[in-house]
Image (cartoon, rainbow, N blue to C red):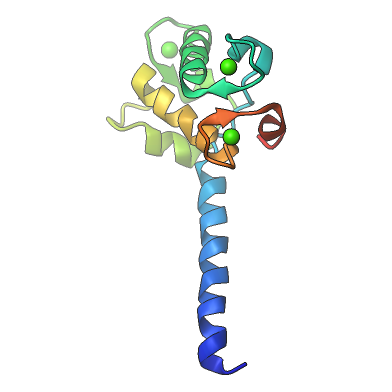
Length: 126
Ligand SMILES: [Ca+2]
Ligand SMILES: [Ca+2]
Ligand SMILES: [Ca+2]
């Protein structure tokens, strides 16, 4: 193999690694949603709407002081960098819209075949 044929392969491998790292960074660090609580249609899959509904429920149960915003303290064990990224207006709290967007980073990371459904097998990879 000549160097000109090897180079594109190396570049390809390098960019795959970069992508994997980026995906890891996107993970919120928060525990997974529960299939039985989230899959309201009982088809064994979590679609985006079911996920969003569940995330809104979690938002309200996590919001201990009821100010409609989640602080990093309320969230507990969370990826700090990702939190700051999600906190668009930099008030150190996530409103429900920011929180939904934040949690969808996990959805997209876990949905490995990109069919917008999370299966029990994919959920194991959370
Ligand atoms: Ca479902
Ligand atoms: Ca709060
Ligand atoms: Ca999927």
